[in-house]
Image (cartoon, rainbow, N blue to C red; front, side, top):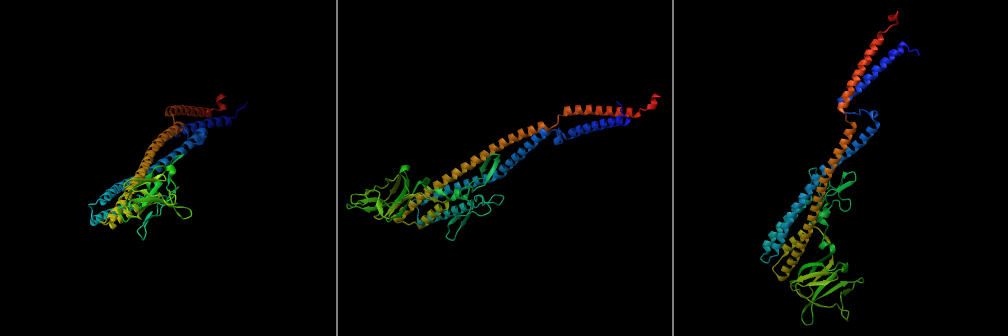
Length: 416
């Protein structure tokens, strides 16, 4: 087979160019520290790297989500701690105010301090975070959540209910709600665990409503029952338990043969039990005085403080006035305990979420290390192998260049 001089020269040039290309590629690898400089170098490896880098980018965003959110949750927990301290002080003031040694003037001072606590609680509820967003507004964080109307009543205008707080993604398949909205913290607090409540309907004697509770949950119903006091024919203090039926008629819980509500002897301080509930009354009511037992209602911390402030300011020295203050104080203490319990539950939940953040951040860090190691194994250069290859390629290029030079000098005339 004949090989032309042109073919010989071109073959030499091709070898030199190929050797220069390989040497240049190895040199770029050594300079960058990467084995894969373009997808064509290793299509499968390049695909894996792209997949891993997308996961790394998402995981780093999860870390930033938690870093940006954690201070807000910590601030909310701190505010609830402040609120807890304030309400503990309020509780002390209520107990002090119900002491018979207090005068109307000193109770006024106690009411003033309670009003300051109430105003401070409003400030806590309307606190902003460093970004200018309201901590307890839920998803409506740009709007002030708590406002006082013309009657002095506090209203909540933030987000509430399902979806009321933002959720932050902490991993590909996990989200954590960011704190609690103001309604859940300050406004919608269940009375007596959300079962039954009671209040004084009338007191002309010294009736004191001590407490109410549940004796058997299965016997509870949604009726309102009235406990009404009277004197029987023997001049003894008795009470009846009645309710209003579907026809609007007053019906005795238990009735005698004449269809009249049965009268029960009243024993001060003894629990009155009926329809799955109990009501404890002390003092000496007058005929016509009474208490209503009803389904529990939700209340706000502001309502609780307003009611006891009003009771302290209206208090007097008569037996009925002192009894009214005692009933109001008992109700306030029960409500304050419920608020404190609610604050405690919310703080515990926040603490659990903050702990979950820390745990998830550690998991994410471990995953980032694993992912970056996997990327490194695929992409990073083996320097020892690359240097050896570079030297081999350099020798091969030099040989090709020398061969080309020698071939280039050959001439037919050298053999004549």
